[in-house]
Image (cartoon, rainbow, N blue to C red):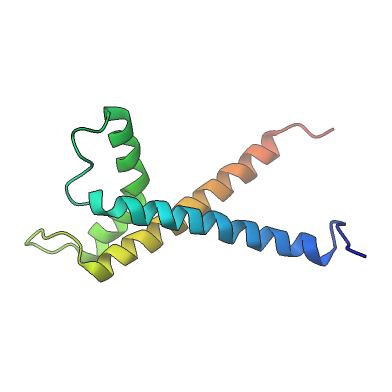
Amino acid sequence: MLDFSRRGYLARLAGPARRLAAWLVLFAASGALVPYFDNGPPTSWPSLLRMVTGIFLAPGALFWLAFFWHPFGAGPTGSESVFIILVNASVWLVVSWAVIRILGRLHPRR
């Protein structure tokens, strides 16, 4: 019989699997948007979408600027783009986890 109790194996497995799935979604979104890191999104995009794209890429961009920027100001190479994608997905996963935890503690318990 399957044990869905709080201490059951499936309950323990669901947490890491859920986080991995969320990280993979963030990884895919970061990978799709990383080409817009250097020059920004196209001007044909609505300004709100351009702003959201910039905010979404900000964590990876800050780490890239801190570690890989050089005086010539060239854009990221292939490996640096992968770094931006990995950092961006990981930072957003940690931020979303922290927000969920904080909001969960603010919610009144019955």
